[in-house]
Image (cartoon, rainbow, N blue to C red; front, top):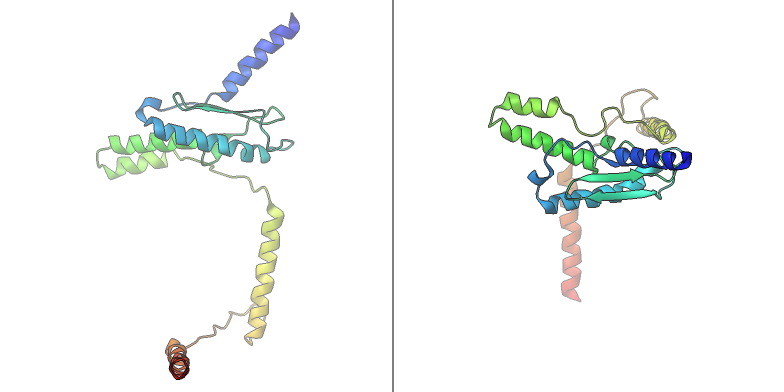
Amino acid sequence: MLSQLFLVIASGLTLVNSQSAISIDPSSVPLSTREAWCSSQTSSCPLLCLQVPGASGSPSSNKCTAETLVYSCICNNNVSPNASEYSQTIPYYVCTEKNNQCVKACQGNSGCQSDCRTDNPCGAQAPKRVNTTTSTTMAATSTATTEALNTMAGGATGAAPRLITVDMGQVYGLCVLVGGFIAGFAVLL
C-alpha cells in the first residue's frame, strides 16, 4: 500500500515536472511551428542533461506534444534541467512568442514594444560558466600571444602593439605584374 502511494506521488511529481508553464494559447501558433518547437525541444534535452551533474546524455523521459506544448525532459538521474535557461526549448519559444504577441498588441507604440521585451526577458539571465578552465587558458594564451607579437614588432611587453601596415596599392600592383607574366607565358606555350 505504501509503495503504491509512493508511486502515485512520484507519478504526480513527474507530471508536474514535465508540464511547461504555458503563458500563451498554443493554438495561437501554427501547428507546423509548434511541431518544429517540439523537435528542437527533444533534440535539446540530451544536451541539457549533459549540463546536469551526475546525468548522462540519455534522458529517461524526452517527450513533447505539439498540440499542447507540454514537454518532458527528465535526465537519467531523475533531475529535470531548467529548460527556460536555454534557447531551442519550449520555455524559450513560448517566452519569445509571448513577447511577439505583446509587441503586436502595442500597435506601433515603441515604448510599449520595448517594455514587452525588457519586462519579460527570454533565456538565461545569469548563465553558469561550466567550463572556466578553458576560458582561463584562453585568456592566458591570448596574453602570451599579444606579448610575443609586441616583442616581434619591437615593442616592450605591456606596450601598445605596433601595427604592421601594408600599402594595398603595392600588393595590387605586384599581383597585376605577376598575373601579366603568367598570362604572357601562357600565350607563348
